View 1 (cartoon, rainbow, N blue to C red):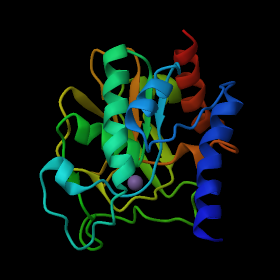
View 2 (cartoon, protein in one colour; view 1 turned 60 degrees about the horizontal axis):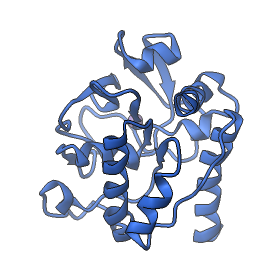
View 3 (cartoon, rainbow, N blue to C red; view 1 turned 135 degrees about the vertical axis):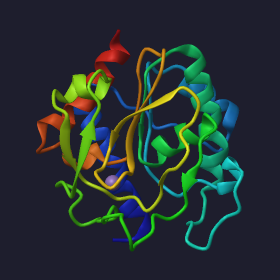
Length: 222
Ligand code: MN
């Protein structure tokens, strides 16, 4: 697959998952930031999808060799849109890069490349994206627990970066057994859930993963 086709395919998974939950989906063009914010704010909720590594300058670090090339357009526009949403109180669902962006936006930092040896297991497996590759432990008394109804879940994993220091007012609500942060929720906010895995690739055949989109869309319709 060419790069463009591949990106289209990855994008389509988010839209399919949201549409199964009854949502109307609008992709926001980011080149003109103020137009992007205005358009996004017409929507009832914000889904921040996966993508390229975030520029480490956004969390006060030098770029390491293993950090990928940042997408300047997204790095510039998405924090502004996110900020507008967080001020509005509307639902936010952040996935992978989006999850990391939420963390960085709230003053947190990232591990630029999860070490391949030592205590960490494999967190980057593109080929099993529709299935699970590692377990997560979920905190009770969390929105995630309420959605999934269990204290563990098995998830896919397509990330080489991870949250290091958590951002302000974020509570870690799921971690992998090797200690990678896999979900956070924003305290004292109606609905702001971030997950490190990719539920959009699992949701077609895993009804539990579809429930994440169902809840987000239900919150958007409130
Ligand atoms: Mn993982």
